[in-house]
Amino acid sequence: MERIYLSPPHMGTAERELLLEAFDSNWIAPLGPMVDAFEQEFAAYVEAPFAAALSSGTGAIHLALILMGIGQGDKVYVPSLTFSGSANPVTYVGAEPVLLDAEERTWNLCPARLAEALAEDAKRGTLPKAVMIVHLYGQAAEVDEIVALCQQYEVPILEDAAEAVGTRYRGRHVGNDGVLSIYSFNGNKIMSTSGGGMLVGADEAMIQRARFLATQAREPAPHYQHEVIGYNYRMSNLLAAVGRGQLQVIEDRVAARRANFDHYQQVLGALPGLSFTQEPEGDRGTRWLTVMQIDRDTFGASPEDLRLALEEQNIEARPLWKPMHMQPVFRDCRMVGGAVAERLFENGLCLPSGSALTQEQREHIIGVVSASAKALS
Ligand SMILES: *Cc1c(COP(=O)(O)O)cnc(C)c1O
Image (cartoon, rainbow, N blue to C red; front, side, top):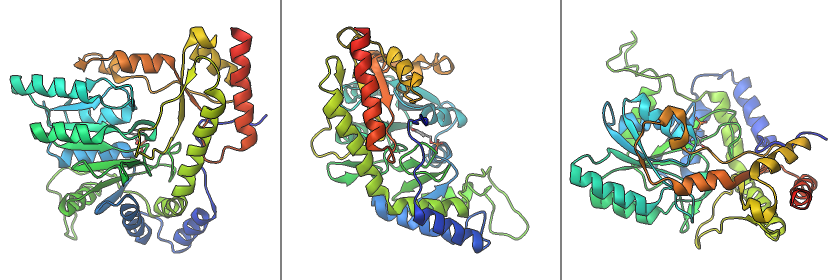
């Protein structure tokens, strides 16, 4: 049986044609017309005014933090339940992540914990320089509540929408509530350029500055003049061509991932001990990955038992992102709450969720999960 991956890339014919067009034009790198077009088309899709195509989502967060003036000794609130790519760049600029717990409904930054932390820090005069919102697994966070709190304390927002290309919150695309927002096109994301990212925002000068910093901060002079520290973070013209192709089919990709979720939920949700998150009314998440919560006593197997049973059939399933406050590298960071993120992590399992997953593969996966329930209970 051929291996079923968690979230493999899904390329189509337009990607191939655009890639060859870029290749044949000899406009391999860096930058070029494909990059300009990809930026414009992506911004139009997410309904954001401006976008800069970069080499990764992590690099995009790094530049966003610099552009927001965050540096040595500053604090940034980051949800603990996320990928390390959200938290790592905070340390690149010498700032300190303050980790906050998740909430039950969306698994994202908990507004109650946020209110608590902001009130406490306001009293001590140590408010953070930014609050990072992450839309985990393509489910929008409680944006309105978070925005209201951040406005009250005048703390700017940075949105990590790496897993949420196509996510709508109350009808509008996520990624428009932060000063800056980022997306990722890494290999396992909902659309992929093999590796890449996008920084979007409403402030044109900021986005232009991002492009400048991402090209080694090269001043417009023929002799390589540099006045600030720069980075090599731009996207190549070849990869932008792939991105343009992926963007043409993004709505189909979202629909396919949502169909995976619906099917898993319909069949597996009927088994005792397995549950799935409900989508809050008015939202349209990407369901980037389908994640189950497993009550091991009722179901009769732990998430790890189940992962191994799937692995035996050459099916890749994975635990949730391990919360940052449980990671040795962020051990010393301040943590606000934590029980919710820990429980979600300990009881969760991500099922294969690629947009090219076939009906047959899905049935195979469902069969293994169902058999585990019976066999081990
Ligand atoms: C993938 C991801 C990133 C990092 O994006 P890269 O393009 O892989 O650097 C950041 N945050 C989250 C939540 C992600 O899932």
